[in-house]
Image: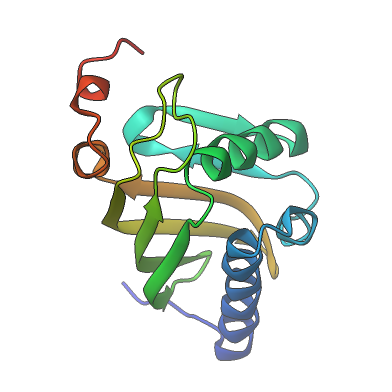
Length: 150
């Protein structure tokens, strides 16, 4: 099986993802949303959450940045495929705000993440995120979230 990846298109897609990730960190979410093809869509695989459309995605940003206002990425590695770019990175943050109704613990986390960004042309159509939620909640001192009903 041969995967033809146009080098110029792959470079443009990676630049869009870098802008996407950078503006998430700086919390310039209007710019983050602009990296999508007009309809933002996130899937958080380990939790089964799906955020469909600008309103739901903004609610997701609000939830995560309330709980982890210093959320950021480290060690990003990009792997271009024909219709997507896979990004491996470490996600870091500190629980400084309410998280699923629980008060902040002040504890930090660092978890490895894989995000698959799907594209039409050079605009994102879907970001699908995979990570170990157990590691995150244990690191922030919230083991009760492991048994919380969904």
